[in-house]
Image (cartoon, rainbow, N blue to C red; front, side, top):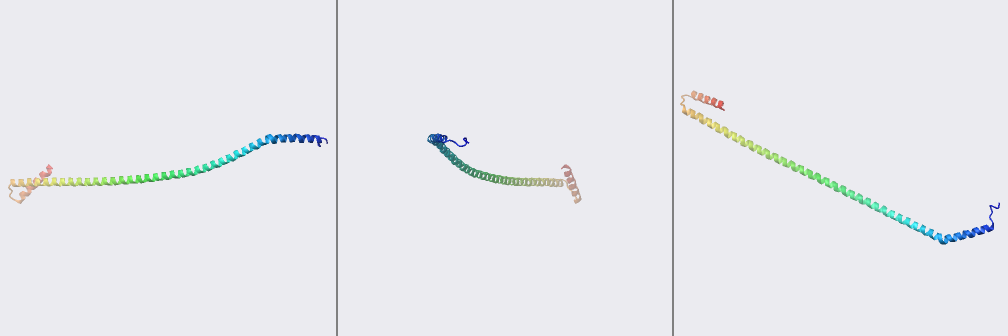
Length: 165
């Protein structure tokens, strides 16, 4: 049982050595430990503060990027609208030019047809006049006695004209 119950001398020397170690720790080690704990606490607080600041900056950057993205999308939409408007106006202008060109070509063709028709009509009139003069000349050259002879001469001349043409 002596092992379980310590002597009074042993207790005294344990108390003295504990007090010396405690005094040395309190005098030299404890301030260093407390200072390092304080520094550690401050660095953790500073890191938390910087993390919060970084989180706020990230949130600001996200909102800024959202705003910029919306602006870019709006600009893209505006550019697409403007492009469509320009395309439509160019198409309309091309349609109008094509219609104007078609109208001009139709007018020119109609004028050309009218001129050709007038020229053909004039040519036909000249030929008819020339044939009438030729018939009259022949009639005047020949003296015919009756209507039947004149009609036969005219028919013969017309047959000759049809063969020549």
